[in-house]
Image 1 (cartoon, rainbow, N blue to C red):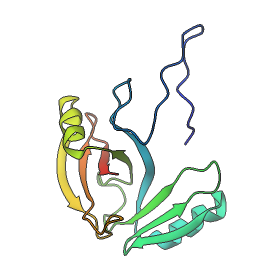
Image 2: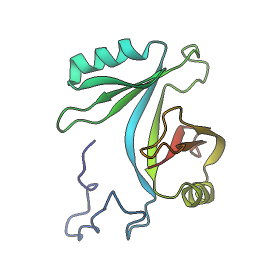
Image 3: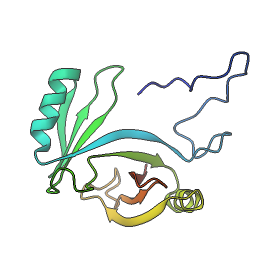
Image 4: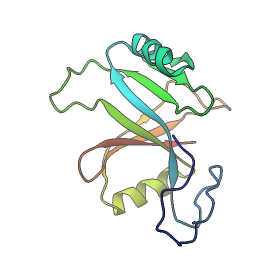
Amino acid sequence: MATSSPARASGSAPGPAVDHHDGVNSDGVIGWIREVVLDCAEPWALARFWAGLLGGTPVQWYPGWVTLEPPPHGQRLSFQASTAPPGGGAAKVHFDVLVGDLAAAHDRVIAAGAVFIREHVSPRPGPAAEPVNWRVYQDPAGHPFCLVLR
């Protein structure tokens, strides 16, 4: 994922810089996409396929979740075990959005039109052995995304 700002109209001033380690910047964003997640039956096999194309190293974070740690200038990809059959409305790709305040981010995405689906606790604890929560939503068009506490 490129870190440059979106294209702007000719002559317009660039927006404020985003500090990805702060809560909210002056543009009012609540987080950033940490990774793109592909649902699949065989996370290791798909991670090895993409590693062969893009570089990087597949790492299992916990059973059923393999992350392709990116090479320089690469986007982090993760592969999540799914038993859902292809098609049939099952999600195959979703975004994980890192946020500093899960409750505040929840309120903002709901106010913007997202639909809350459910909350999870990661099987992998945080750096201080604390539980790591995340919440699943759908955007107004039905695309899934997750808010993850960083």
